[in-house]
Image (tube, rainbow, N blue to C red; front, side, top):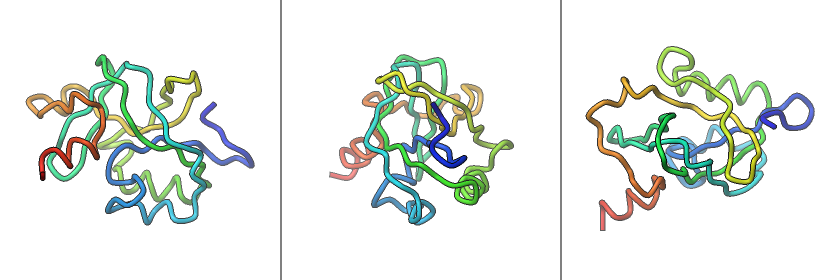
Length: 129
């Protein structure tokens, strides 16, 4: 379920919000639930400095799940431009759990390179080594 305890939400992150990445500071007060993968229902694409998860593909996306309070969710919404740029939606993990994630539409990422591994960190490491 996308709801955690005490009205908190569980959010799946897969790019710059991952631990050790540029925007992770927004999750400083959030609880790491664990490493996770989505069901293979998405594509991951590179937008240069950050990735985008897109529904309708055939890739399982690698990431982390955090339990966030309403203030942190609001901060994430501002960072991701929800609902004008990214859209926060419920998605299924490979273990059957449901979490929230920020998605773009196929039209928004047309022509952008796919990350076939579904793993942003791995793709960045391969590109820079």
